[in-house]
Image 1 (cartoon, rainbow, N blue to C red):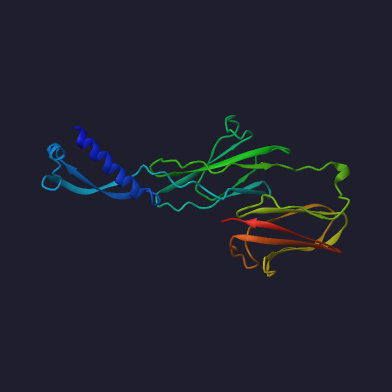
Image 2: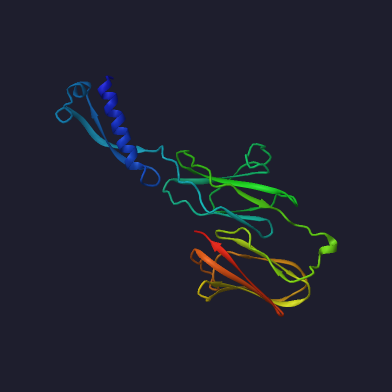
Length: 253
């Protein structure tokens, strides 16, 4: 193959690649086949041998987004869905080292957008990252690394808190699950409600009497009707007896 032909194929590949790179998943692009003499004479039209299509299958899926975690009978991980037509599965990596080099845990293969991790120890800091794979075996870039600290036990002398408290939700920002922790120094009726920034009630998370202790509740970014809410800033408010406290949290999409 002469230099001119090499040049043409390089240009044609770049053209096809630029077309395919702006759409998700694999794509079909035109191709043109010429003889060697055409490239020497630059007579591309008179000696056209074939016009057809080829399928470009070397484009990886988009990078997964929205990886977040909360605690509910385990470490509950969620993320946004990839929507490529040729999507195959996700690979979820887990490690105690943010370099993911220890090999302590096997990767998890799943087609879902959530995973409940039940293998952990109290006090551990675990790291997670996610990649997407298509039917051709192409692998996306890794998502942002998520860290999660496991806190299960409280010292016996601290089982009953000294004061009421509402803690900052974790993780924050989040999508779509976050955990709200609160402390009750005495038995009391507790109401925890989510509001939007216009003061409209979005969801009641807790409305019952609780014993004194360290408590938590998970919000899955749905309203009182079970429908997902839009991204934005939300307020969460606790009222227990005469105690009232409000904090902000950020939902990402």
